Length: 115
Image (tube, rainbow, N blue to C red; front, top):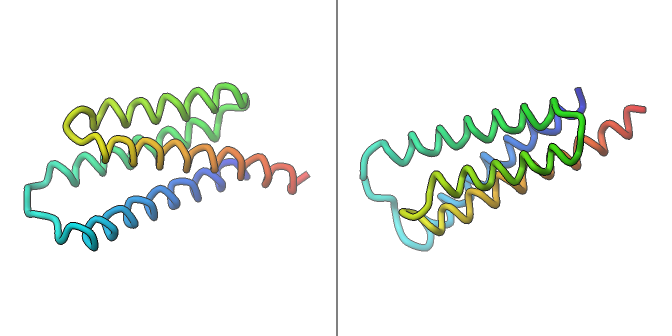
């Protein structure tokens, strides 16, 4: 249960990182052009993938498998965004993997406190 709560917070952290990226991009390069809905749908798919991966990571008991799932999540995000958007690919894959791994570490810490 503690691991599920930690990974829920990891998904919230990923949402905050997505929001931060859009705020920084708007400050540095101006407002986003109205280029359709494809970008928003891709980010929604990315969020569903991160949430599903975090649920799977929370339910797996072995740390090695959790680490492999975090790496697979980062690779899946890279495949989704490369070669069209290399900077987005690097940022989103690192944000997804880092948030998931922080969820693993927080789940360990919370499980230790519950004992």
